[in-house]
Length: 171
Length: 454
Image (cartoon, one colour):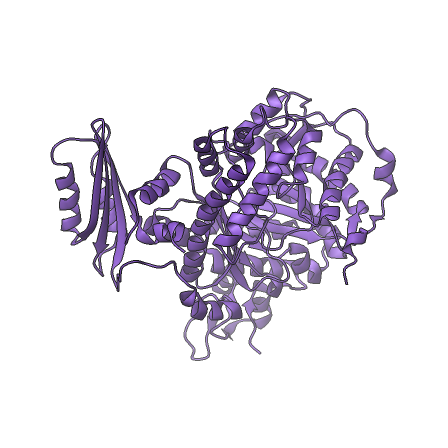
């Protein structure tokens, strides 16, 4: 059976030349360094230089990858299909053009607004937009574009994934 | 979608104003296959395996934070208790394992790694003894490594020889880290009924029943519960208080469930548990003590505190249990004295004594946590404090722990600053009466009658 680990001691015992290891074998960094210093080649069965294997997370992990997607998710009211939904909120001092700025930024990212609501309290506004993000658009990029809108003494935008709200408020 | 504005704003408020966060995603890694008769080879394997599995943990955590807008404050690693891994090599000095873990933690970018641990509730193996003896040096020589030992259980009773030795280790660790206020002891904890899937340091480790690798998540959120109770007001009765805590804990735990599923998927491993503990930080408002005071005691430590804490811990568990099928770990309320601004203040004004704190631990989820005592406290007194705490756990079928710091050169009432998440402590008075004879007897406190269940 192939060794799971190759340590410095294993390389030392193997002596000069080539040390053939299994593709799953983990060669410790110290063993690699010792091998390089002492002219030992660590190779796989085909003679290619050893490369680090993907981590073996264990038998339960393999099962988890099959079962995790089937854990029940909190219900969604709309069929979002392959698109992502995000919730954009903005809070701040009201002035002309705030809504236009936010929706222009969303439009530049090809996002469409599904739901919108705004409340005003003593010159301050509270805006909530539910937005559909098309496939291929990065959530991180959208977040960066929207969250840099506004500023100090103006308004603040926040973008959160719809799944956060679904987990918190739906069963 | 159908979310109301109220629902959306409630969530935003929790994250933005009430310091809701995921306190930790902890990757458990089994190191049992790293055993080797040669200690250097064993340490190489330990280092290589931790790095291989843990290297992308921080990146995965950050990607979830970015994608979901949820802060994940800490990413940590928990390993198999090193005493089991080291048993094959028969060495007396196991500090090389601690250095290997420390180096691996640094490469992975995690601030703490737990698992320099042993289970000795009935007795010592040679490896357990070697691990015990090396704990003070291991903690002094490393930054990230945390040590935990299981000294008792309901099934086995209390190993008083191990408790007495642990007391000496605490004093040695404090002495070796005297220049940092005995800070080494903040990374050293002992347990009764140790929890094998605990994601929180210093007690994090991956026990013998755990899989090859596993993601465990610890949620937090004292600030959210505090705000909910503040809105409820003082007129509501305790049933309403419990209901409010339960509903809030449900929502907090759902965030843990979401992050746990997502972290496991992205790491390609098993989702273990969500630990639904209210874990305070020194930040203002992020305090379990504040919650107790909102429930209705003038100061934490005043009469009524234990009842309020019992209600809080129970309601958190009930809310959490409905929110996730994977609730585990410690799950309840943490009361680390130095890490909670309200607790520090309670000690400062004389409301919270060590005796009252011990009473509170009979209904919280852990035990005496981050308690500072004078540096010249005798080992026998520490043995008494620890044995008392672990006896509470043993008799009540619950986890209890002690993380106590005898601060070198400090006396009762003095202040010690550890900084960061570890906070500030006021040295507490353990009293002038000790238990030298009890300390000297050794042996075992037999398992209580309630453990005979078969």
